Length: 83
Image (cartoon, rainbow, N blue to C red; front, side, top):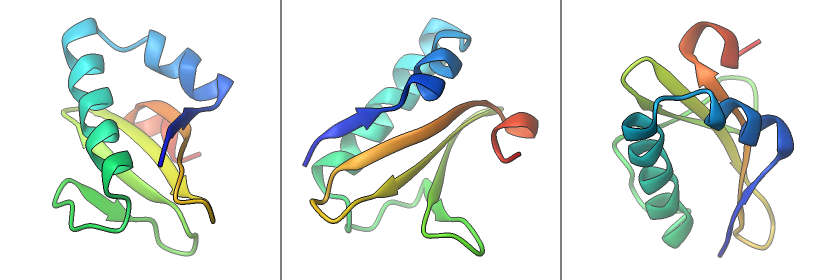
């Protein structure tokens, strides 16, 4: 179980203020430790196999692959991350 971050998500994470970015990454690491566990801060995305996690106005979209790795696809402001 690993946390993998795509280049687009790395770019989005770099734009988030440090304190909120650290909190978001800590949340993603907790999810990576137990991908199929219950996480009240993670919500499934409708119509896809992905999930969303939030930190104030910031969001990260991720999916879980067959190896139970958590792959962060996109990160950024709430309004732009779902497009």
